[in-house]
Amino acid sequence: MRITAAQRIHNENRVRAAMDRLLRGDIPPGGRCDIKTLAAEADVDRTAFYGTRPYAHLRVEFERRLQTL
Image (cartoon, rainbow, N blue to C red):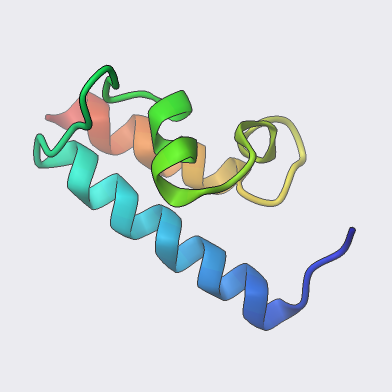
């Protein structure tokens, strides 16, 4: 199912907010600072972060930010 541009922006904002929480150490019980937890926290399908999927650029951003910590 395709999403609208507004939905994509909303999802990206949710992912970035979840990313910020994880990177500052606010990790849910049983979670880690990883893509699986990021996807769960943002309520986005984890596969959307890989390959040519819509949020692959956010995975790259998350991994880059995580590596700089």
